[in-house]
Each structure stands twice: as structure tokens, then as C-alpha cells.
Amino acid sequence: MIYQYWDEKMETLPRPELEAYQLRQLKAVVSYALKTPFYRERLGGAGIRRADDVKSLEDLKRVPFTTKHDLRDGFPYGFLSIPQEEVVRLHASSGTTGAPTTIYFNKEDIARWTNFVARCIYGTGCNRADVFQNMISYGLFTGGLGFHQGGEAVGMLVIPSGTGNTSRQFRLMRDFGVTVLHATPSFLLYLESMMREEGVLRESLKLKKAFAGAEPYSEDTRRRIEELLKIDVYNSYGLSEMNGPGVAFECQRKDGLHLWEDGYIPEIVDPDSLEPLPDGEIGELVLTCLCREASPMLRYRTRDLSAFYTEPCACGRTHRRIRRITGRTDDMLIINGVNVFPSQIEEVIMAIKEVGNNYLIVVEKEGVLDRLTVKTEVGPSIFMDDARPLNALKERIRKTIQASITINPRVELHQPGALPVSEGKAKRVQDDRPRDV
Image (cartoon, rainbow, N blue to C red):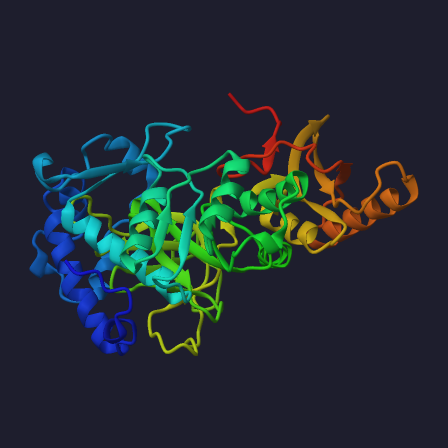
């Protein structure tokens, strides 16, 4: 397969032709899904016993949703639809809360995945002249190898630096003239603080762009990274159940993420009723993978919250765009009966310039009530021994958070570098309330 990172015909395909292509791909995926015990039962219950029983895209809605729980129940080979000798790679989730979810690929699956990631990278303006430092975990996590192979397909010089060892990361940036980074947003913020600590001058680096993903983050966080590092930051979306990165990406206009509908069928549903929502309303993103043979995935509940844009992008691409992920349905905190998403608190914190780049949300039980504490570092320009401006800042943060979520939090201010930092996905919430047994 020849990688084609700018496919003008496919990326600008009129909607009727795009949907006709999706139907052909859906039939092919259903034929593979019927080879697995799980989907043979699910599809049979929906009246689909062979691929030709799928007459239109509407027939997909007859199929029950697939969940992470289903994947864990099927571990390790329950969702494998081809002979094991044809499998060339597997990726898996960490499995920290149960059995891992495992996805398999044949050679054609890898090639298709690479093509989508390369399409994303090229859409941000990257090309063969760029040097790409991939500061994300390799191994079973899909982000490392997914971006690595996509960057090579575009023709960039790819440096597989992985996570950690910030001194070495800076040395690689300087030595090889790195122009593009890939990291979690929290690690990009951490890099900026380490630049100051290690005396790395921004003018000594050639950085132009960064791809940020693997954890939800607010628009204020994106702006802060862009201002601090003086780069363009592009929002990336993917998940291991849908191959990994390459599901959706921002183009140079940064006006929503283009979701590649020749590889995925998206739906937005109400997380409670599971009924479809009108365009523009925020709900849970449900995805069907059209580009993988080894591990079919139909109507997978991502738990990620997003919405469809109602108008086309000015770049000319016709695939539907989704809004940045605002959080996950399973990230929601219920505090004294009020639904709170950590992203709501992040938006407040990152909009206040005196606040530093790291924070932690702590929920505890005090008697019969929940108590919310927001711990945040201050910026380097704030002196911790001057009580009056510190108290004023605490009060401003408290009032702004209360206005946003209606809950009155405690606010703790900490010196820069005092709160724990993760070099992978950031742990932003510490829920210390006792669990029901």
C-alpha cells in the first residue's frame, strides 16, 4: 500500500459519495465481525447474519453498542476475526482497572492506520523538511508507534525519544533542530517550567508546532502552551479501540477536529438514554471502525464527550468535524449532588495568568458532606512570602470556580514544582472519599 497523506479526492468527497463508500466498508467489516463469537451473536440478534443483510447505514443503528466491559470479557482473543498467524501486532490498554483491552492488526490494518495518522500530520502543515520528536510512551500504548509510523510516512525525520529525561529531550531538540513535538499537554507545560530551571533559551530551539493528546485539556491550556513555548499546538484525538491516534485531528485553521469518515462512522448520543442527539449538542461519541480487519469494532462507546459542528470547514475538507473532547462520562465527579467535570476547573485555572502550570483536584468527605480542594502552583513571578497578593489570588480563584460550578472550594497555593508531575497522562483528580463496599 502506498501511503497517501494528502488524498484530495477522498478528503473532499461529497457527502453522498462518502456515505456510499462507508456502506461498502461497513459491509466488509461486518463480514469480519461475523467471524467472532461476540459479534455473531450481537449481529444475529439484530437480524444481520451476513454482510448483504446491511442494506444502508441506518442498519448499523440496529446493532447494540460495544463497551470496554465487553472487550475485557473477551480478553484475550474474543475479538480476533482472522487466524492468529496473520496477526503482525497487538496493542493494549494498561488494564489498571481490570483486564486490558487488546486490539490486533494485520499488515493491511497497520498500513491503513499509518495512512490516517500521516493525513493528520500533513494537515497541520508538516512536511519532509520537519524534524519530529515523539515524546510519548512507546510499547503497548498506541500513541508512540502510531505517530512514529505516521511521521515517517510524511517523510519527516522522526526521533523516538519517548517520555521522561527532560535534559536529554532538550539536548535532542538543540542537536537536531527539532521543529515538531508530540506529547501530552501536561508534559508540554512541564517542559516550559523545566526550560526555566535548566536555563534552556527558547531562541536556541527551532520549535514550530506540537501535537497534544492522550488526555482532555481546555482551550485555555492550549493557549497557555502556545504562549509559553511560542509554538502552534494542534489537538489530536484517538483511542486504542479505534487503532490509536489518527481518528480526528485539527487542520491549520484549528476550528474543530476533522474525523476521517472513510475510516470511522461517528455518532453522538445522550450518555443516559443512548438516543442520538442533534448536531451541535454535546454527548457521548460512539465510533464504528471501518479500517481494521483483525479486530472489528462496531458502535463502540468511547465515553468521550463531544459534539458535531454544523457548518463545513473553510479548508474544504468534507468529513465531519467534532469539538475538542470536553471530558469523559466516567470522569464526572458528583460533589454534594452537583455534577462537576475536571475540565470546568481547568478552564478557570488556566485563564488566570498568575497561576502556574500544574494543579490537583482533591475530593474528601467531611462528616456527611463532600469537600472540594483545588491545589495549584503559582507562576514564577509570584512571591510566596507576600501574604496579601497570595490571599487575593486565592480568593479570586475561589470565586471564579464557584461561579463556574456552583460549589465553594478550598484553594491551596503552592510553590512552582511542589505538586507531583506525571510524564505520561497527568493525574489531575484525587478522590479520597470512602467507597461503598
